[in-house]
Image (cartoon, rainbow, N blue to C red; front, side, top):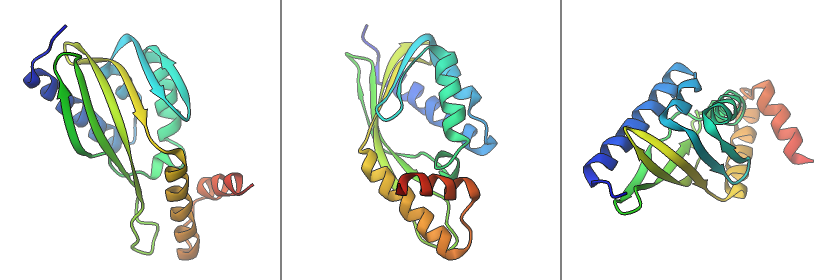
Length: 163
């Protein structure tokens, strides 16, 4: 099916608003409601999740633990819309909170969303370099450790990745 650029842009704006609300509330359970019941979420480091329940379980677990819970926003650096395929493709920035020394830590991913109509998405795929995210989160941990602000879950994560 072909979608208009306006409808794709409006649906993508709704996606971004939902993500902002999830960040503000510290609750990611409504994130899965943006997807169809049979949606597929492809996350290259964590696997593929099918259906709202699997997407909800994964996103709430991931975003409530380090490093996800320390990410402060998920703005789109750019976006394009493919009306023939019904895709919204964007680069999402993943900035972390100040670790206590004023330094900035962020990494980006490319997200491909497939539109299903009625403001819902049938598929999301996040593409990124896991090593870049590992370096970013490790750098954040080292800065927080030096500033005396490293949370216990981040310390445990850092110890695990150092092995």
